Length: 92
Image 1 (tube, one colour):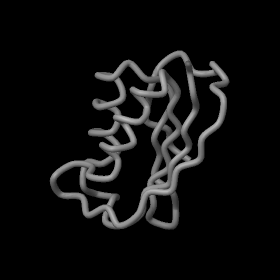
Image 2: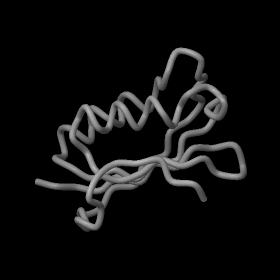
Image 3: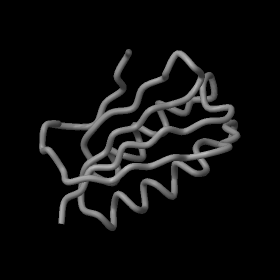
Image 4: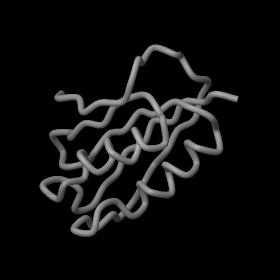
Protein backbone atom coordinates (compact mmCIF):
# COMPACT_ATOMS: atom_id res chain seq x y z
CA UNK A 1 0.00 0.00 0.00
CA UNK A 2 1.30 3.44 -0.93
CA UNK A 3 1.53 6.03 1.85
CA UNK A 4 2.64 9.63 2.33
CA UNK A 5 4.90 10.75 5.14
CA UNK A 6 5.60 14.39 5.96
CA UNK A 7 8.46 14.80 8.41
CA UNK A 8 10.16 17.69 10.14
CA UNK A 9 13.73 16.97 11.20
CA UNK A 10 15.36 19.24 13.78
CA UNK A 11 18.84 19.50 15.23
CA UNK A 12 22.08 20.18 13.34
CA UNK A 13 20.57 19.31 9.96
CA UNK A 14 21.51 22.23 7.70
CA UNK A 15 24.97 22.68 6.23
CA UNK A 16 25.85 19.03 6.86
CA UNK A 17 24.87 17.44 3.49
CA UNK A 18 21.46 16.41 4.91
CA UNK A 19 19.35 17.31 1.87
CA UNK A 20 21.70 15.67 -0.60
CA UNK A 21 22.08 12.46 1.38
CA UNK A 22 18.31 12.35 1.91
CA UNK A 23 17.87 12.74 -1.86
CA UNK A 24 20.27 9.85 -2.55
CA UNK A 25 18.61 7.64 0.07
CA UNK A 26 15.10 8.33 -1.26
CA UNK A 27 16.19 7.68 -4.86
CA UNK A 28 17.90 4.43 -3.84
CA UNK A 29 14.67 3.35 -2.13
CA UNK A 30 12.65 4.43 -5.20
CA UNK A 31 10.53 6.91 -3.25
CA UNK A 32 9.00 10.08 -4.65
CA UNK A 33 8.61 13.48 -2.99
CA UNK A 34 11.02 16.17 -1.87
CA UNK A 35 13.33 17.52 0.83
CA UNK A 36 13.86 21.20 1.70
CA UNK A 37 15.56 23.40 4.27
CA UNK A 38 13.21 25.54 6.31
CA UNK A 39 14.04 29.06 7.44
CA UNK A 40 13.90 27.96 11.11
CA UNK A 41 16.86 25.56 10.66
CA UNK A 42 14.79 22.39 10.30
CA UNK A 43 14.54 20.13 7.26
CA UNK A 44 11.13 19.27 5.81
CA UNK A 45 10.65 15.97 3.99
CA UNK A 46 7.67 14.66 2.02
CA UNK A 47 7.95 11.08 0.78
CA UNK A 48 5.56 8.64 -0.85
CA UNK A 49 5.92 4.95 -1.57
CA UNK A 50 5.24 1.50 -0.14
CA UNK A 51 4.68 1.74 3.60
CA UNK A 52 7.52 -0.60 4.58
CA UNK A 53 9.98 1.33 2.39
CA UNK A 54 8.84 4.69 3.78
CA UNK A 55 9.36 3.24 7.28
CA UNK A 56 12.97 2.39 6.29
CA UNK A 57 13.39 5.95 5.02
CA UNK A 58 12.01 7.35 8.31
CA UNK A 59 14.61 5.28 10.19
CA UNK A 60 17.31 6.91 8.02
CA UNK A 61 15.98 10.39 8.88
CA UNK A 62 16.60 9.71 12.57
CA UNK A 63 20.34 9.44 11.79
CA UNK A 64 21.00 11.43 8.61
CA UNK A 65 24.53 11.81 7.24
CA UNK A 66 27.59 11.47 9.53
CA UNK A 67 27.96 15.23 10.24
CA UNK A 68 24.29 15.67 11.22
CA UNK A 69 23.05 15.65 14.80
CA UNK A 70 19.34 14.83 14.61
CA UNK A 71 17.49 15.85 17.77
CA UNK A 72 13.91 15.11 16.75
CA UNK A 73 11.84 13.76 13.86
CA UNK A 74 8.12 14.48 13.76
CA UNK A 75 6.27 12.46 11.13
CA UNK A 76 2.67 12.64 9.93
CA UNK A 77 1.16 9.86 7.84
CA UNK A 78 -1.61 9.98 5.25
CA UNK A 79 -2.68 8.39 1.98
CA UNK A 80 -0.36 8.92 -0.97
CA UNK A 81 -1.41 11.63 -3.43
CA UNK A 82 0.69 10.34 -6.36
CA UNK A 83 1.53 13.95 -7.25
CA UNK A 84 5.31 13.50 -7.54
CA UNK A 85 7.16 12.07 -10.56
CA UNK A 86 10.43 11.62 -8.63
CA UNK A 87 12.31 12.71 -5.50
CA UNK A 88 14.13 16.03 -5.54
CA UNK A 89 15.56 18.88 -3.46
CA UNK A 90 13.08 21.74 -3.24
CA UNK A 91 14.01 25.32 -2.42
CA UNK A 92 11.40 27.11 -0.32
